[in-house]
Amino acid sequence: MCRSTVRLRLLTLLLSGPMLFACAPSESVENVELGPMAGLEEELESLVPTLLDAFAVPGAAVGVIHDGEVHLQRGFGLADVASGQPVDAGVAFNIGSISKTVAAWGVMKLVESGDLELDAPVSTYLTRWQLPDSEFDHDDVTVRRALSHTAGLSLSGYPGFQPGEPLPTVEESLSGATNGPGAVFVAHEPGSRWQYSGGGYTLTQLIVEEITGQPFAEYMKAEVLEPLGMNSSSYVWDDDIERIAATPYGGGGEPIGGPRFTAMAAAGLQTTLEDFARFALASMGRLDGEDGTAGVLSRESLELMQSPVDPADDYGLGYSYEVTGGVTLVGHGGANEGWMAYLTIAPASGDGLVVMTNGSNGGRVHGAINCVWQRMVTGETCDPPVTIPVQVDEETLRALEGAYAIPDGPTIEFRLTDGRMGVFLPNGEGSAVLASGPEEFFLVRAPIRFSLERAEDGTVTALLLLQGDEEGRAPRVESP
Image 1: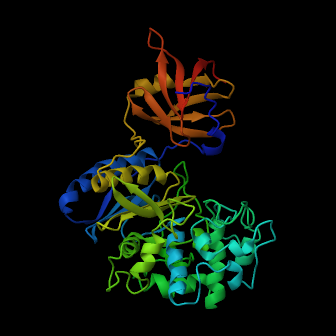
Image 2: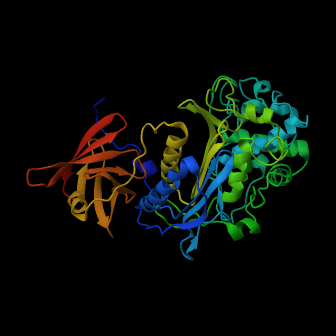
Image 3: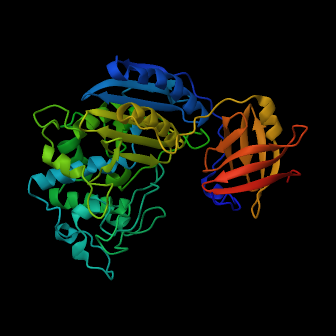
């Protein structure tokens, strides 16, 4: 192991305040006996409320598919804390970048109709906007490459805009009106490598509008969402979504205004658990109709979308790809401020998992749920394993309170408030501290773990830090 000083480099980027929210008890939506997966529900009943409480995520919607059928739809916690509204299968969540996976269906629908060629230059279909000049050959920027993040395009993701803020046009967004990330341009040679580009999906969003003459959201509703039976889903945040949407919450469990997007294809889809499960079924060809996709796409298109596109070895057309324990898994993750979501399916066996949360720390929740599901479907455990918080006595937490000097870094202070431990930088930014063992801890908002060094009398004298492969020691000092 490499021994060097742990400087907690990510603290100032990742910490957003102590997590002091306690989640309400879970509420049942629909429970169906799972046969060979019957133990999954019991694990979720025990695990999910613990995760929600520990990571300050108010609610989660979990759907499990087994043998090509929806066997479990389950709500945990709250869609809205103030009103006490529970999560159920009809509550809408934003699903972040999984919007790309659904958007790819809309693009492939145009491919099947003959209106679009995957390997044609994107410029073939553009009149309202063009990629700015670069040193690279833009004829190599194709739709296939845009959908597979191999087109050499810039702009990884979008923060969105707050409710009430005017949204730019698609052309303005492509030109840089993105609330920070900048414009879409050809950043490196198309086809030379895989590099995630939400901007590429905004470009395909414009192409859909150019070809169809319709607003993207209207086209997707008519050609993809409604045919799949996703009748409570929308790429626009309208009154219908507002009526059924969960309230999004930040890293400290505080209600926030969830972002809105011009970049709909990249990040703007809202959906419910019931609808999301239907999309998972369609993604494995197990929905209505002979082709299993309600007539939206052929099985050949599904197979193409779920196969890696060179030079990527783990991403197709809107779907990630991996083989675990000999089982092929495809899907996508999604993350926007206040929202986290996850989709994974094993098409061959008809198994699938969908998870949505209304909290910025929801990735910790769906990561642990996925590890439970993956173990049952593939026989493999997650590596590295997901850290599950455990309870420790208040005496141990009291012993941890105080200030510690990070070598070549800041002095950080641990404070206990209402039975919850938080760590704070000198500028006041902080993170919840959770226990993974009797005297082992980790931070919610940074990949840092530590244990306690004690003197003979039991006094905590230092923190023994671990960040990746780096180790360090932070001695206890006088409070700053």
